[in-house]
Image (cartoon, each protein chain N blue to C red):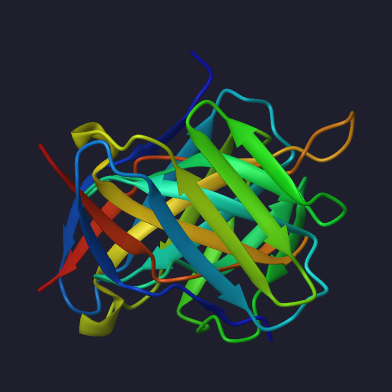
Amino acid sequence: DAMVIQNPRYQVTQFGKPVTLSCSQTLNHNVMYWYQQKSSQAPKLLFHYYDKDFNNEADTPDNFQSRRPNTSFCFLDIRSPGLGDAAMYLCATSNQGGGSTDTQYFGPGTRLTVL
Amino acid sequence: KQEVTQIPAALSVPEGENLVLNCSFTDSAIYNLQWFRQDPGKGLTSLLLIQSSQREQTSGRLNASLDKSSGRSTLYIAASQPGDSATYLCAGGARYKLSFGAGTTVTVRA
């Protein structure tokens, strides 16, 4: 089945130690998103890629970076995680063009714990 | 900036009762309005998407309406079942830039 895959599902890191979260998709969608969701809160958009075009949200901290080396993969890098960065990180995809509806398809998420 | 609100935060109903979930948004110039389901500790599953030019969408027991003039969307779930227990989130905004509500957590009692 076509899907959005996130690895790892659970990540534990130490305060200040860089961490990378991975997202891959078999949907061949041209748009990929990263969201941060803290406990019992709404998901918050961090940034998205339209193909290779990177779009950062104005209030996304500089500590968060992203890479999209090809259509299938997208990475979230947290350069110096703080305790406040502990959250669920959700990757999503959508397709633009060809009669698509812009429905977003989400992966299962990576839960990040910062010690 | 689009602000999305969902009230109530939690809802408990007996099995078989119809569910009505509310969503309000501040900017009527939305590109589309999407409803998602989230099970505990999991990602989001898309339920329905309503384009800005549409008034409603239906899928099985689910029906969602959109009223841009009043800044409201409603998700109806007919004849609720225990398997419908989850958190339901709505999201709207510009294309590629969804703003989410915090969700309504639904418990359907058997």
